[in-house]
Image (cartoon, rainbow over all chains, first blue to last red):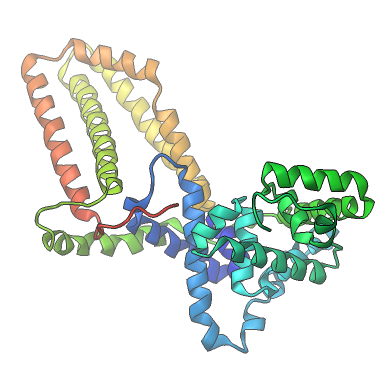
Length: 152
Length: 235
């Protein structure tokens, strides 16, 4: 479930997230020899899932360039779940705002806020320099804040 | 943000990234103290920190959604071919040398798991066999067998209901594995079973365990899809 939600937050489409979850597990199986058994398994798997999704997003982007906006429209995926509750609307707004970010911003938000990684671990997971992690995270948060009408 | 350099209050005030890093707990002790000093004096920045915290909490409150289908069968199906095509990969590497500590560790783990499985299987076989072979204990044995059957039925029920999501399923597996290990029960049954076992059965049993370990481990190692000699990735 955690892996599925990681993928869902990153690609915004339930079906695709399911496929990517599957791929993440298969990839994890192939990479088991790289897994350090002394560390917890799930965080490793979730970080791996982030990279699987990023690869997928990078692949899909050229082909879907103009469809992209629509294909990641979470409202479409969530329509059956739509409810009047404010809480749910807020959650949808957050989801939509995250999905409106460019993929690399989405990834840092996912790793920081949903997986609770340190800047250094995010840098290692994404293969980015630490300074990029900081600036991506900062800009991603600003973009989110603007979209969500928050203040920071 | 340069590490090991104590920012001035003005720097903190004009560079919001300090506050982000502060809220994230990513500042060194000196920077942290500097930001705290500035916050004590500056209501505007205190407000920013509060707003950031509220904003992050809002983000992180996003609820998890369940997947619409159980992903486990597809994963297993996808792994199936990987297992089958693996042997040629293995043959390209006849020495079977797997570079790196990670590979060795993985093999040790596999050994432990497989050995555990084999022993568990053999013990179950032993319990069943003794129940059948020993006429005096037959009734008790059969009831033990029936409990086993009921337990398995239970387990598959549990699995079926836990089928909704892969994660849920994995948890259920872990749970039932934990439940399966009920030492008092297992030992009592084992005791009962062992009392009626002749030496010949013991010899056969040991042989079976050894064979199982060798066979299953061999199969699993063959099933490993291309272990690449690689730098152990930092994960």
